[in-house]
Amino acid sequence: METAKNDMLCRVGPGTPMGNLLRRYWMPISPHAYVERVRDRRTLLLYARYDLTFPVHLSRNMVDEFNRRRVPHELAVIPCGHYTSGVTPFKYLDAYRLTSFLLRNL
Image (cartoon, rainbow, N blue to C red; front, top):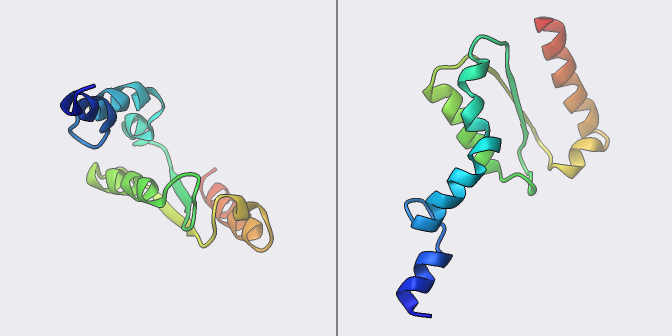
């Protein structure tokens, strides 16, 4: 395979043909498509600061998108990873943030 054709098929960064195609395929499950739908709802954005399963920069991008569109929200960042959010003491911190949000907003 020619180098140029290989590059076109294998590079998936922003602005590349395959990157653009993959982004179109992922759009139905992208949270960005739903930001405007929650504009009139009380929203809590919660993410784990050391998450390796859902990269933190994507969580921050989502928060930036809420801010860019001026969609009201509360932000909670838990100082743990995805899997450690279910163990002591982080599970209590997570439960506290979620419960206090629900108590204030239900």
